[in-house]
Length: 248
Ligand code: NAP
Image 1: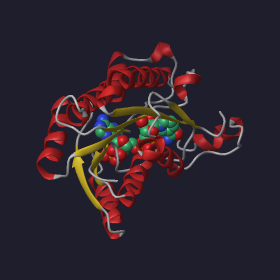
Image 2: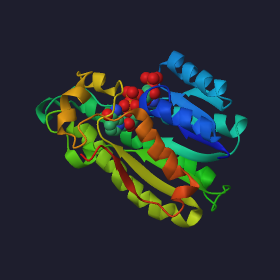
Image 3: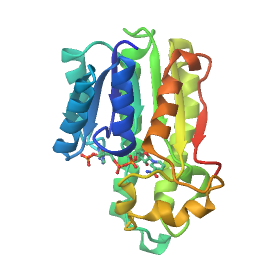
Image 4: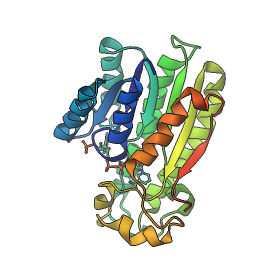
C-alpha cells in the first residue's frame, strides 16, 4: 500500500492494531492519540522495528483545531493521504436515560460523531478526484451497539454508532464517483480498555456467553477487517457495514 493512512485513536486497543497492520502493509502510518503519549510512541517504535514508517500526533477529535492541525501535519511532512480510519471513540459509565447529563451527551456525540465527520471532511478534500486527490478509502469504526441499542448501559454511545452507520451509507454514495470508498466495521465485544470507561473492565467476559461464537473478539480480528476494506481486494465494496462480532 502506498501513501499515508491516518488512524485516529491509534495508541491503544483496536486503533493500535490497525496502525501495526497498516505499517506492515506498507502505508506510512499517522496514528493519533488523545493523552497517552507513551502508548502512542510504543506503537510507533513497534512499527519501525518491523521496518515500517509511523508517526504519532496528539489530537482530540472533539476539537476542530486539533483535526485541522493533524491534517496540516500530514500535508507538510508525510506522503499524500490515501486512507483514513475513524477509530477514536468513547463511552461513559453504564447508566439509564434518567441519569444522562447534557455534558455527557455532548462529550459522547462530539467525540464519536462530530469528530468522525470532521476527519472525513478533511480526508475527502485530499482524496477526492474532484479536488487534488487520486482517490482512497475511509473506514469508520462503528459498533454492534448500533443494532443492539445497549439499554441501561449506554444508549447514547449506541446511538452515536447508529449515526456513524448512516453517515457511512450517505457519504459512500456522495463520494463514490470521486474515487473514494467509504465503509464501516461494526465490532462486537472486543478485549480492549474501553470497557473500563463504562465501569466494567471485564465486561467482555461477562457478556461473551451471549455471543454465538461464545468468546470475545481480539483487536487483530477487527483490524484485519478494516485493512481488508481499504485494500484492492474490496475494490467494488462501498457503503458496507461489516459486522465483526462473533455472530451477535
Ligand atoms: P480504547 O482501547 O479505549 O482506545 C481508545 C483510543 O482512542 C485511544 O487511542 C485513545 O487515546 C483514543 N481517544 C480517546 N478519546 C479520544 C479523543 N477525544 N480524541 C482522539 N482520540 C481519542 O478503545 P477501543 O476499544 O480500541 O475502541 C476503538 C473503537 O472501536 C471505538 O470507536 C469504539 O467505539 C469501537 N468499538 C469498540 C468495541 C470494543 O468492544 N472494544 C466494540 C465496538 C466498537 P489515548 O491512548 O491517548 O487515551
